Image 1 (cartoon, rainbow, N blue to C red):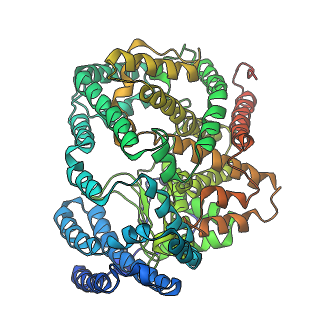
Image 2: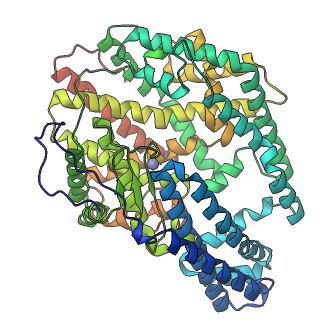
Image 3: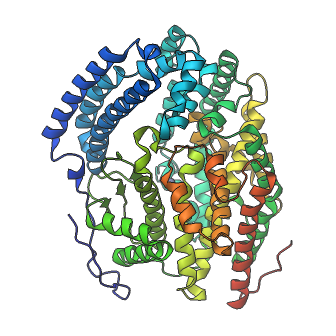
Amino acid sequence: MAKPHKHNTLHKSPKSKETPHNWDLSALFADNEQASQYLATTYKQAKAFQEHYQNTLATLTPKDFYTALLAYEQLIERISRVMTYAFLLFAQDTKKGDIYAQYELKSNEAHSLLVFFELEFCELESKVQQAFIKQAHTHTFYLQTLLQAKPYQLPLSAEQALIATSSVGVNAFSRLFDEHLSALKIGKNKQSEEEVLAELHSPKRKKRKQAQKAFTKSLEDSSPLLCYILNMVRKDVAITTKLRGYPSKEAPRHLSNHITQKSVDSMIDITTKHYHIVQDYYRIKADLMGIKLKDYDRYAPLFSHASTMHYNQAIELVTQTYKGFSKEFGTIVEKALQEGWISSHPMPNKRGGAFSHGSVPSAHPYVLLNWTGNRRDAFTIAHEFGHMIHQELSKKVGTLSHDTPLTTAETASVFGEMLLFDHLKSTLSKQELLPIYAGKLEDIFSTLFRQVVMTNFERAIHSKDGELQIADFDRIWQEENAKMFGKSVELTKNYARWWSYIPHFIHSPFYCYAYSYGQLLVLALFGLYKSGKCKDFVATYTEFLSLGGSKAPSELIKAFGFDIESDRFWEIGMQEVRAMLEEFHSLLHASGYKVRKLKR
Ligand SMILES: [Zn+2]
């Protein structure tokens, strides 16, 4: 277990020794042996639960139902504990896939004994259901959401047939899509998709242009297949909508996000109306680079300052940031660093990327990082620590109500990034701040505006009947993107084919808008925090996070005096983006850059 470092390391050179953090999994299990025994006991308990309760729910009193619900939750938590342990072992060493698969198989066996519980509850008489819900305490919302899905469920035998054939239905096209794209060898250097897209961030224009050309060529070669797959997904969405009787093709997504069609429509409408913010930014970017921007210049780095950082310095920075916001948040971060919640550095066979796993309420979250020494990595730490704080605070609502829908899942993480950004604003020089501002704005554009462009693209393609041709997809993609960029970025002919590698269109139709939703929510919350108009913001925000997924997002956000059903709510976040762009503009001006005036 890593020791905490309390000393200030701000002035050490990046070459000085870093103090990595490592996981201590003993909060879950001492070893594999203990985990296996625990799982065996869980299986026996699940069997006993099934024997005791199956086909009896209708006869229970509300009090007895609540007892059963808690017992059910306990069993789900036991299974999650084992699966968390297996997942973390695997994330730490991806060569341990076989161990993971073993645990998964046994866990599924235990889980299948419990599946009757939710189904049987949904089949009860409405009067009985309501009586049970009334006495379900923090699990009221969980039970209500089970019922929301019910009108769209098919008879059990039909559901079973769909589950049985799911891996050869649209899911098979999803897998084909993944396998095809990950096998691509792009350009003369035979690069992967990830590697070639990373070159769009190169300071060398020639390199970016080459990457764009090579990637387009590769997509063109695959176009008949990718076009076919997207058409199959369109058909699946149409069939499922009709079969289950959803009011629209996007309705199931809003249902699982716990939000209304009206709220989504108004968010998309407001965002679309503010595309000019994106155009203003890219006009400045073009001026700074002294070129007419083309699509492959979008991600070009603007300032060439060294952006390396020492791990200890980043940890110190993030800790100070959270401490400065709230003592309670600071305490969680310090505990995490001292008690083995963090795995910080890349290791052989360790999984890439970063995440915070909520684990189970009776243990604590685990955060995986892959520190590379880039200043951007400090924002990743702030992001994952935000998730971690959210997960830790919401432990008290229990396993069944712990998880949040995507619409609020990214609140604490993106809010944490804003806190770090704000902290840096008061500590860095103008020169150091410029790239951070540009990075933040471009981040916001990709999570907010770009995701709405994608949703508008999806709305357009799913509104049409019959199969679409490659050229149809090209045209709609180009049209929707051109609305956002206006004349600020020239979209070359090559760019038209870039709809074809976006995984969300295939894996989870109408998923993208939730990112925009979350981003605007955070901007509104952060603006409220900075304005000082909300007297007990920190306490309200802490309570908001502590409730986890135990209430609907609209309900949770009401505590701040916001109404997410109102158009005006989305304007607040938009004003924040605008303000950030204006700050960036003034900063450029003050640093001696010649930039044109902002248009609006
Ligand atoms: Zn996240």
